[in-house]
Length: 368
Image (cartoon, rainbow, N blue to C red; front, side, top):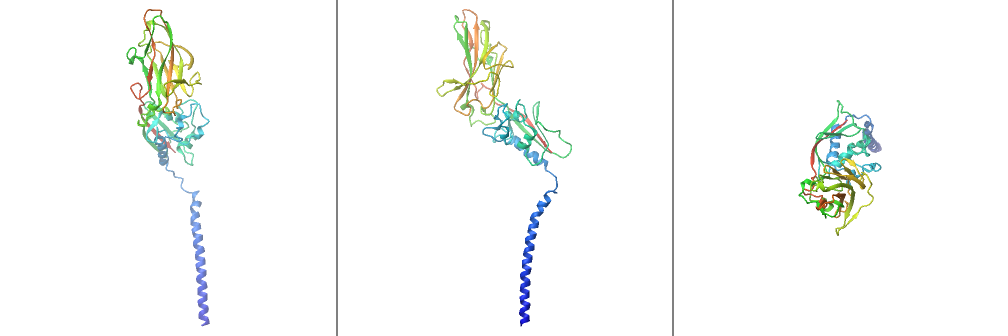
């Protein structure tokens, strides 16, 4: 009986030892299995799905407005480089609601078409390609006869690389092309008594922010003074004036005025004399000062004004901006009524303004 009891006790001790050893073995096996992927990480295959990287890059470029988006990343002035690091993502879409429709302002910034503001190869890798590897790239956009390339790109290789081709449309800015021959005689004319021989007078262009920033208008066709530049062209200014009566007509400058709720206006001070990151003012292609100009104009002269985004006070969507073009006139001493430019042109969604156009384009992205 004692022998039988002794054998049973030994069997019990053996079972407990076996369970303890087996448990330790299982725990060690689990730990080894969990460590194996880490050991193999350094020797895993270097095959990379370049097509996936190219696809991801193309999606960011043509479907994403970028970040920050409010206000948009492209609103840095053409000479403002110190805040470039704040840009997180270089998407080119007009908005998240307009995939494949690109903003002209963003396209110009992305492809370094604005002097004084440039992106480097590292900027493109960090803000549009992403990834842990140092990818090489070739990014281009063609619109009509124009082809733009991202700086720092390389020639596409003959070996393996990822490629995406996207059909896009580029939203071109609006233009108030004020050709005075298009208006009836006297439409924008003022009259001066025959016994007067000189006058100084303004011709104005009214930009109503509340009308332009209309959320019911598709962003692809919206005139947005907060993110797009506006252009004003004055041409054929003599068309309905009595040219034989004019001794001289001089352009004497430009002023920007904020229109208040009661209809009165106040001058926006601090305009720089020549083109800057707020505006560009030219007569026949030559920059002229906003104040103190004295440029002789005639029937062939063209005055061009570009306002860069964001326009002054455009965040106040109920306000308006007046652009006043100032002229001085000297007339013959005659017995006829003298005529000069006067009145106000509306910058809105009517026939007064060439609306934004969508130009066809092709975006190509190669990554390797």
